[in-house]
Amino acid sequence: MVDVVVLLSTLTVQDSREPSTQRDSIGVVSADTKLAKKATDISKERAIFGRQTKCFAIRTKMAVSTTMKAVYLPGDFQCNIKDIPIPSPADGQVLIRVHASSICGSDIRVIYGKRDPKQCEQPSNVVCGHEPSGEIVEIGNGCDSVQVGDRVVLYHIVGCGRCAACRQGYMLMCEEADMPSDHTKHFKAYGWQRDGGHAEYMLAEEQSCIKLPPFLTYSDGALIACGFGTAWEALSRVNPSGRDTLLITGVGPVGMAVGVLARAMGVPKIYGTDASQERLELAKAKGVIDVGFDVTKLTNQDIVTAIAEVEEQKDRLADLKGVSIAIDCSGVAAARYTALLCTKRWGRVVFVGEGGSVEFAVSPMLIHKQLTLHGSWVTSLPGMHDLVDFCVQHQLHPDGIVTHRFPLQQAHDAYKTAALAQCGKVVIEPNS
Image (cartoon, rainbow, N blue to C red; front, side, top):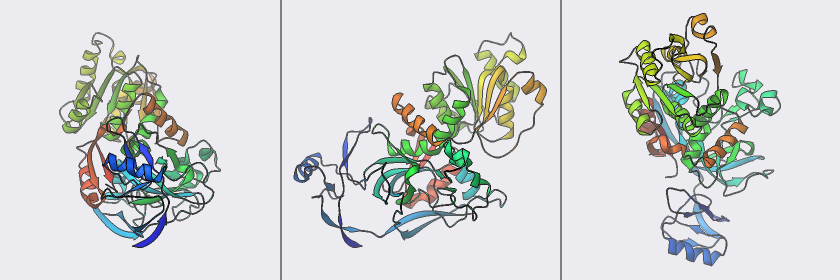
């Protein structure tokens, strides 16, 4: 612990579901509103509020830790918490105090469990987590689009900035991405090739920061960072409207995000399939789907017939039955097959779920039905900006699908819960 002189600005955060609170630039909240008003009067424009509801003027000596706690995933379902130095931002970088960092399915699939050397894309010596949201507490030289106190969500990949993909905002498709990780000069993903968000603080590039409007919470931002961004990109491929019906195969967190956004886009009827009855019930309870099908109890033909009956199309030709849009969020071969089979003529299908394979008869299932099949991978930086605006315009809180929240010290429990694949989104709150 060291004594330093700090200058922190007061930030008012309004969550539509909670009363307005005063936060200092490192997120400490005073629940005593009278004390908050007194402190504001004293400092005129800025004040800092301590955890014991003591207030101080803007220039205050206070104890600041030089270390922070961070989570590492060495594989084999292990989760290690270490004390490491708090980093300092270099030119063009910012230091973020992380308030919410959610767990992605790719973390579970590739990093957390039994690692496949052919799939393992991340060394074990970086802080994990690529879905962070937090508050900027320090900026490096050259940063002019953000300032201390800004609430931000991060686009979780940094590219070279020069190739065609980067210039379009698709840094995840940077030309350097195909190089071995130890040969890439610029391409780095938070939580994969560089330290991520499962820590009390993290460094980020200024260009990665997207400002979080007051309406959205930190956990909203964490979900936008990847899962909802992935859903947004998939839906942008097929432009859903009130004329469509939608099937989501796999109603985990990404599948639920697809349903939330599609509903806001006007889709009136949404079906879902999953091998987990718990997730189907959760998706229905959240209003994400209208009808759920447990694939452990039903065949593909059962699902096709059930959808046709709901759509009152059972007397039509077989290839006219079905939904107009199907999006697979599972990455499972059987679910991908179901998505193609249940889509009617001229329909649109999107494969989002990572991994695996699928085999099907191309002529009857794709060509003769005149289907359009898309592959979609996460989203772009401009796409994430659009998603943030969409959530505000439609008054959507992505964190409505969060079912579990854990402090950083319980990261192991958080990963165990997410790996069971029986819940909604799991969020780690490092500074809770």
